[in-house]
Image (cartoon, rainbow, N blue to C red):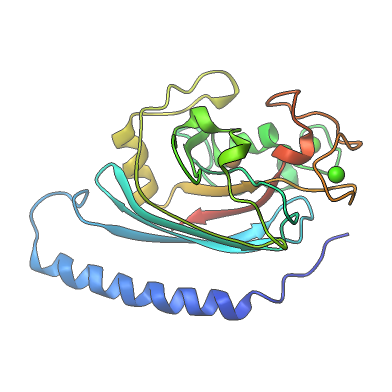
Length: 233
Ligand SMILES: [Ca+2]
Ligand SMILES: [Ca+2]
Ligand SMILES: [Cu+2]
């Protein structure tokens, strides 16, 4: 059932090469100015996105975080459900492992990690990586403002996303203030998750045997189950 991820190696290498140059420049800057505690300098984080739930998808993400803002973020993904919108978020929780889930989190033993089962690992949504407009957790399922994976691929970028206070209630417990969230993500605790898997291969998000999403029963589980995940480090 799982497909191998072999085609993205070259792309990943190129991105890591670019990132290494950026990191060297940042540490050179750092040696010149020793005031402050580091929040005011830009930190570049990268994530390798690996498949969940046998999606066969993969990708990379890069984020530049300064103070309480993401100055720039890019997400590149391939192997996703083609021509379908893919919700994508940065997850973080002060009570979460801040890692990608494994089948150890498959509480009901149905062989898949649904979005809620993943929360103890990746935490609640703290940023919605939408294409336009609001980027707070309120846009969690704003499917008309997420990238559409033409032929299974999308290349996303956005600038100047402000972190916001996240209340953290119910299944999304463990939010924090904008500053706490920004500091934690700079320390390598942010998790990028892209959602959406066509389990039954009918080329759309349908009410397959996986049923409705536990986040909102108006959506099929196919639209919200996590497809790839990676930690921003
Ligand atoms: Ca499950
Ligand atoms: Ca389907
Ligand atoms: Cu998410």
